[in-house]
Amino acid sequence: MTKILVPYYSSYGHIYKMAKTVAEGVLDIEGAEVKIVRVEEFEAVKAAMSGQDAYVEAQKAQEDIPVATHDDLKWADGIVWGIPTRYGSMPAQMKQFIDSAGALWMNGDLEGKATGIFSSTNTIHGGQETTAITSIVPLLHFGLIYVGLPYGENPEMMTDEGVGGSPYSASTVAGPDGSNEPDERDLIMAKRLGKRVATVAKALRG
Image 1 (cartoon, rainbow, N blue to C red):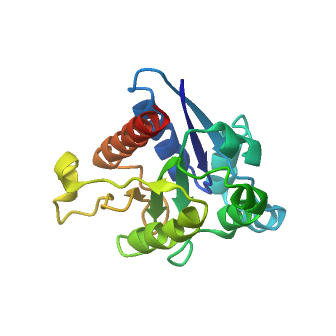
Image 2: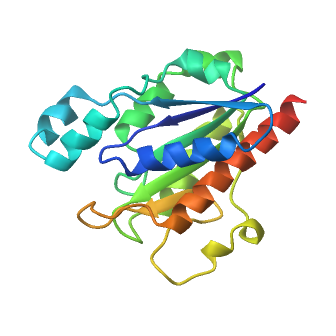
């Protein structure tokens, strides 16, 4: 089996929905299995956001998703990260999870594994591309092999409309108030990313 991990962090559920679609793409590859795990929320953020119904509902919907561990990263042959944007880069919750994996870096446990990113922002220019590009840096330190989204396989990117997707990552636009649902084109590209990472992981493993 080719084992693909989808670790994600999601405040309002947009990245969670994308994660499930990425997982569908993984399962399009024969012999692939997928595990979705969530990066744990900070208690301080829970307290600060507890008055927002949309946040509370989204967090409740994710309660049954297992919390990500470093053993999950070691288990996987490929990793597709769900990283929403905070001021143009990854959120502190994801950064802490990655920063705490120093032992995996030291031992080379993730070297040679395929990886990719999917992201979200409130607005079109809120940092979808900068989040992906800056997030690539620590992934390369771990020795992961980055898989992007080529234009040839993703004609949905050839648009001037407010949808996600770039050569760097699958992505979605949540809207200024977070009320948007992922566009169907965003989900199509997210599914292709899952399939693409699984394909590369399977080839590397073989």
